[in-house]
Image 1 (cartoon, rainbow, N blue to C red):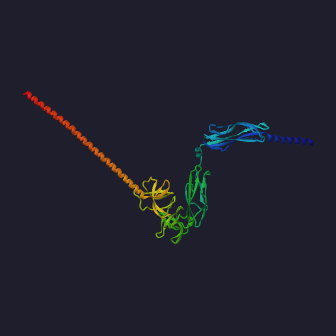
Image 2 (image 1 turned 30 degrees about the vertical axis):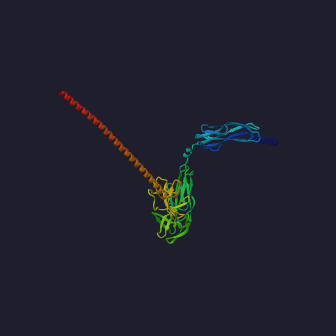
Image 3 (image 1 turned 90 degrees about the vertical axis):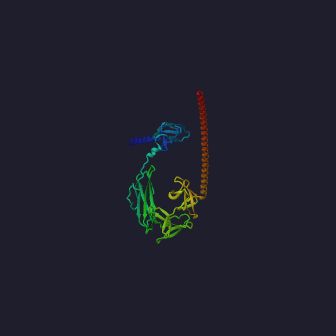
Length: 458
């Protein structure tokens, strides 16, 4: 009895292993389709890979690749493939295709038919692959982009904003205690497809520090939030210029020396502050910071305790400090031009002209001159008044010659008119004289006729 049970057990185990082995060795093939992208912009190309593979050695195969021709163009590759191998261990082979999207919508790329033969197994069961590609125009893609460029939160870590954050409000201020040198600006976007820049650790100095936080929506629209961080100063030196308030910069680390200026110090009130002096211009410059944290240089006059804004503009090798013109050529009128995003007083012949005159000092030489500025090419050169005067003289001479010619022509025309008039009068007199002679002749004829008639009657 025990022997019979063992036999049956051995038979079951053998059958089980035979089934497993048979399953493992069952031969099949795949003809798969892979695309380089699942979404393609209309007008652009994309790649398709067709792979013939099997779990046994391949002998030969053939397949037909089909696609939606109303939406796709085949750029390269052959839809019908018949191929074979001579080696004994080949189990896979791939083929490359390039398609161009020509209309929006969904397009299918699929294996329409396929036959695969194994090297030792004959015809194999074939799984035919397919892929669907979404095709969109650039306008359709952009129309689907999110327009949301709002922040969901904004702040300075550990400090409250003024006013309280509201995604519609773009400007905020923060007040910090003296001695603060760093902050952590934090924020998050309302839409996760938007990008955020401008947050993170920031260095701050005494006075106003302006930071911009930009949110760029998926469609490219940008919204800018501004946070002005005011670090309180110990006994700040405040200045008012043209109704606008400034603070004197008292840390040299916040300043950069202008060209041809040397570091020095100047006493304002009872405190020494960093400044810069030039032997060429004889100016002493100090830094002033406005309420938004922008720093600019100002010419400081210690005797008058006054400040005049100082601006430099580099034109090739000329660094110019604009000044009030002492004298300008005739026909030029005052105007305002923009150089490097700053307004500068200038002089023009007409507002639409690309040329303007600037008066200023070359800070590298200390010489003051009148310069001709070309706004189109951003170039500057000394204005040659002598040459302009010669041109003006030539112009006046030309106008005088033209006037003389015009006068001469008028005089000749007048003489011609007078001569024609005289000729006309002579002709009239001649005609009138002929008429008079005819009248007298007729009169004499009539008188003679009357005398004859009288003598006959007698």
